[in-house]
Length: 419
Image (cartoon, rainbow, N blue to C red; front, side):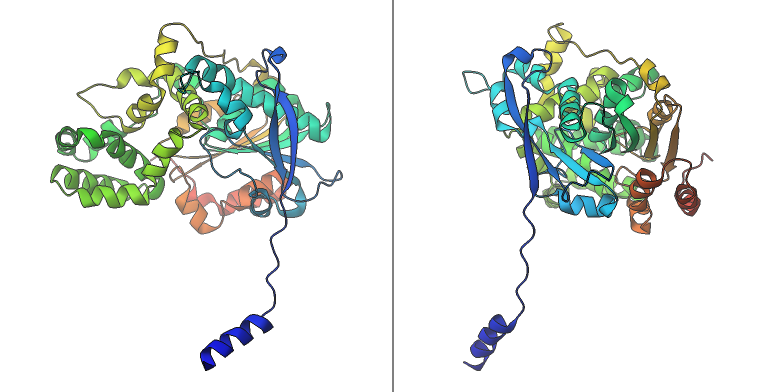
């Protein structure tokens, strides 16, 4: 009884925890199809991290269909982590999460209409949505800052080709460019060659394990593919070997533990959700121009490419039949831009090749490129506390600032250098 009274007293006297502030959101109407505006409009939601201040520059955080960090209620925290009070920070909850648009990609039979999905969710639709938000917030001639990571970074660079004159600075992490990968002959899946180099005995063991678990093939492939997001590059060969040997030896508990840690089942659920078609279109765009889907065979294992082929096969078939076509990729406009562009990339990134980033960086007259001796999620640089300082420093002070030079000097121990 005394404990109960004490608990009640504590509840009464404890100071009230203030409720988090309500998200500052706004909705604008955008064309369902920017190429055919006569088809009507749909509401697109974007959110501010804090009340808008006209005296401050405006940063738009760009995310694409498979990214989670921009969602309703997220922007206040994201603003604190990115730039603090230095800027207005806006995140666009994309068309892939807009029910009024996603439902249009569903046919009368309740299944995805893949031609319609391509029409609604190809990269040019996302780019023009960003442009409509820019004009709604800062006016037709107003300028913005841009931030994007991974797939969002890819969209930032494509946006710069179309509307870069309205961007003063753009910060991107792990940007890829599938067209450049195709031109340079760079694959987006190095797994098979890497395990062959680290331990050739793993190849037959993996083929054996996949043959034993045909119903689990997709989960196994995604578990292997997502491993590099959770394991540092120096630990990755051993982690791969442990997983493959356990699978070949019939120890399924290792797969279940790894699949849970690497969030494999939520990823599969995500692809089959209402936003699944938008995600599939974006993944298709990231792989198809590289020619990577042609590498899938029974004699080799390419976890990322094969898993994405599972989800995007209808789009691949449409493209191979000439029914849909990738947009042109002309970087001429990039050479004329006055925009300051910063590219943060990793040498051991499984998703965005550093060599592509080099070619991408030198497309811009005013750029900086930092190649970290790290992986896709910048595990080492993040642990050091330096990674978090880069977007704020660059976006606030610019390429030629003393602040950025000092940060680059501090980060030298984490820079990759060819041996």
